[in-house]
Length: 114
Length: 113
Image (cartoon, rainbow over all chains, first blue to last red):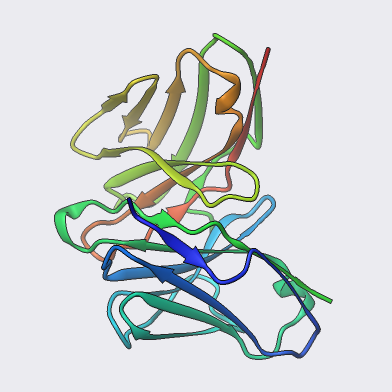
């Protein structure tokens, strides 16, 4: 059973703070992803990584950075949090091999920036 | 530019009836499509997928239909159950380029008693 865990379910931060969101998967997946989910906008891809130390920008990377030092861990960093980054953040992982693109998601982190 | 669109934000269906959720896409390079289900305060979970070489895929109560010429897919749930009440996201991938998915905006399904 694939398990994707996220470090916090709920987080409240102040404007200007540096925020770290951590994601860990236990299935040895090559690919990892960070999304944000907002009402009426669906899931939007922020960054993804297809290997250790590799990263690619998604559709909305502005204001975010990522780090992947180990295969199982993918971190999302908000360098200086702003109120428009209040959102649900979802991490996912998938296997590169086999042509199957199913992604497995963590439970999400509800981030509020005040 | 929304490449995957779910034009119905919500849908209400009676228990036992058929639920039909629709999804349209604009990128002709998409060749693999998935449906995810999401309950509040949980991450999305994979439901069913279809490759562009097929026009139908069935898994129990769930069937996905793909019409490539219309760039349209639909998810049918028969019979609908109260536990199916959730937000459903359609997603698409261009398998030739990357493993990333492009998601639609979601449809909230409510199955009433």
